[in-house]
Length: 198
Image (cartoon, rainbow, N blue to C red):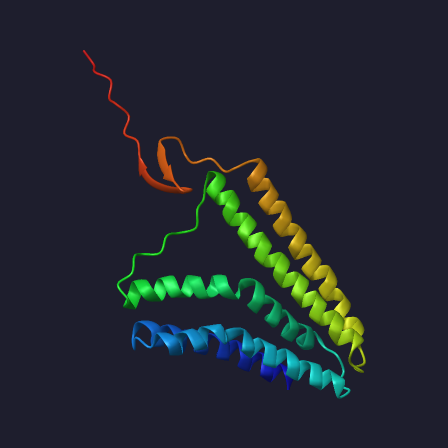
């Protein structure tokens, strides 16, 4: 049952996101759009509550129960950035907005970008592990030892993100020679003056 609920929550997230953006840019229903987009985390909250009740009822713990907790952690940590990413593209396609800029690749801007990803990951990991711990402590489920591997996996993910962000802070990636860079993105190339040959 939990596998079905996880799949349903995944589909529901993207369907509600698409409906929210369609309401905003195609139908011009801004209030409806706001309600739908703000309500996105509710989908994962309901999934987690159903997971909690399933384990509370004596179900055997499995990795899918932990996955349900990670969905809520992801929704809180990464949800707003996912909505902004989709909103920018929907606005460009249907609302006459500017073409979305790619992520910065060079210098301090790239470092800031990597630290933003790192912060989202740390928030997601912290919330997910807190929820998994709650599932272990406040349910009567058997087999919760399966949850322990999530501490290692998510801990490794957090450390990897910290290392990557720190690396870009200490050794910022430099653009190719001759590139004109604005906010970490190449916007043009310098044309070297040609030497005159006599």
